[in-house]
Image (cartoon, rainbow, N blue to C red):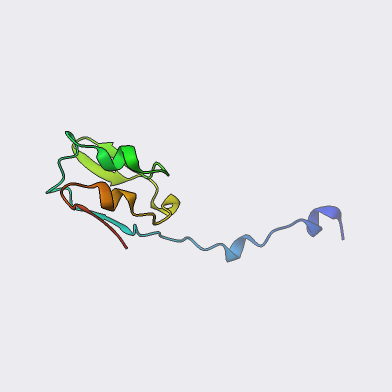
Length: 80
């Protein structure tokens, strides 16, 4: 038994996970292009602007602080 066999990893057990966002953004009511309060206020830089829409760049970095939900003047964001 060589040293290489000691460090072999079992690659067959890798599972691909799909992550659903727990941040719901209603872009129909969002005035994001003129507002951007949630993007600026998010302490973890989770939210970004894509055109006129606000999207969660990486929802897994969200710490559920709900600052974005509280600062949104149009109540467009819900953190589950």
